Image 1: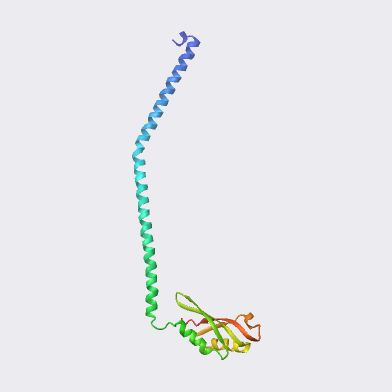
Image 2 (image 1 turned 90 degrees about the horizontal axis):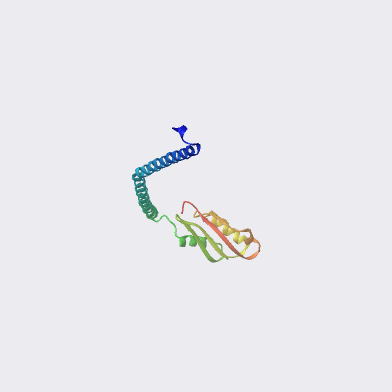
Length: 180
């Protein structure tokens, strides 16, 4: 029968055959893709629900973490207060420190101001400003303060020792660690 079809008709028949095979293949391929897509819809829904659940639980954990951080800070603050209260009257006040500095000062020293530096544990250092009549009196003040058991170190900048008389000075006095 193939031999009876003219070559022009044979080409048209082959073209229609390949067109029908191609259309059938495309239809089957599209139908398979459609079936797979429909079959995966429950998986997409499940994954979306799991993602939303994880996001919600993450938000809850962040809120709990913030709450715990706040509570931790409050506990630390309370522990500092309790430790200070436990210490009783062992801490030294700034008026006691300033009084000791006044008592240690040789005659002629005039104090103008005091600056007390503190941290969480208590006083760390005191900065005293004033005028000394001579360089020797200022050095004597430094030596006297360093020999007192309340203080650890007294520092006078070199520039404050430049003049011979009426020396304006700034002395930084570090408190001994045992007294803080």
